[in-house]
Length: 145
Image (cartoon, rainbow, N blue to C red):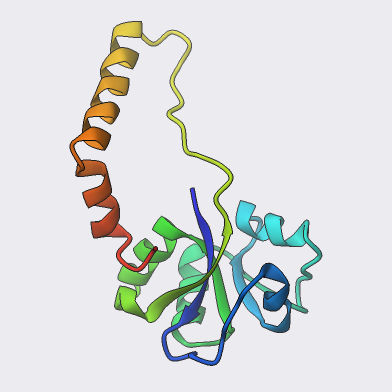
């Protein structure tokens, strides 16, 4: 799980070395998202540095129109929403990795047959080992380092 600040490829003037550098820019966020809450907890303010949209799709439309300086988004969500808006993924340039401290997990019912869990874990281990997982990441998240 990686949250990035993305700059539009046309914005070559934006250079971020730290999260503090981002305080000088307007950042498009999805209202109520974990990513937005992450910045709020670090002192960023709505209307000062944060420009929230109702959801990721609307946020991407604003990014495409360059209505703010930086886009705050999960890597996979940014790529998906860019494609949905007819954008080339190369227009999204990762400017700063904001957070990668959490992982994704499978959630299953407590009543799930342990054999199914074992098959799921084995399948994940296989695609990690044989490179298919990394190939999927490269295919769907091409501009993410």
